[in-house]
Length: 533
Image: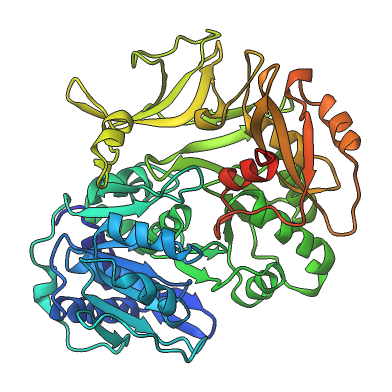
């Protein structure tokens, strides 16, 4: 038995069939339930003509149907593709066509948008609509596309679904596209399992065989996770798979609402609450401060963030509000998996605790020596993705093969302290060059968000005649709070060198982020850069 994601899930489901694996609203599924329903989805996809290697879009909110479809695709060796449900028609058309979707499973609320672009997606031929009751509209689809209503009814087991799987089957994860067009990261199943899912063991050595994984699920500590972010986000898919492969329960929130999250914690008693950075964590902290005494939050022991770094100010809030809480500030990417954890020191620096697979390298791919002032790129070797789908040029830059070894060159810049500790500086693509000085937006955002009046902030470089670029910030204040530009600049002087202090601050009612909470720097630049006359 190979390290194939579908095979791994099925082995765990056979070992712990009666455990609860998914909760979403009033629906609860055991491992046996989910396996049978995913089998049914797999059978229907295959009957509709979806073949191994073909791409199927998952254009849905969180729900059991999303997970059933995800597993159903993997079972027949098709490739599930995550779709951002907030995309405009133009963005959807780009993603559908770039991914080469042949199949699509879509919530009825998003079906009108999907139908509008389907005619210009030549590969798309099979659509299944999930009737959630959120809309009664039934759009017109091109006649060449076979359209049916989704059903989860399980039929008789079909052993043929297990045939032909390998560790080389593909799993594709599309990035958010917050700094450019979305890119599809192509993983081998085995590499995804080892890198993104830590070999099925988040707290120890990787489980390298199906037998080891099953034994761990049967005898290990049964955890419970609550996902506040959408499953179409990479951090959510990592957590979902990790929970399933450890025989644990995942509680899904269909759409995030902070007060609703407290009600769900009270009812379902999760141990681990997963978020994406401050955009989800800060409203959750505010809800706990205002209403926490009304709910039983005693099960809540771990706050885990992936996809965005939790600021030190938010971490301090949770330490105050939930005594004894453990905070896991995970560091990783769609292109590399789970790379380690971040600790933010009193000096404001982000230090990465990572394994031997992560290095800091220069442009020549040679390691940066400890104690050097040189800034390099974070890189990962070993179990890394194969490519960007449909983009050989970016693949060659991001996933080079050097001396027979495949690497991921991440966009994050870093340096190495004398003791070997890796200090993460920020995304190189967002680095601001102001008069020759380099400023990473993440550091300035951390300083701004530590001001008690600030709810959220994004920092970007804007053109400047004298310095080339200057540091600018878009700031969202907390409801009822007030602060002036000079208040924020004065606060930043306590944390940052003078050249890093925002020269311009624009206040906004709400920072624009992706549904998962990731920063949209394209939007920030538009807000901060006045239109040319």
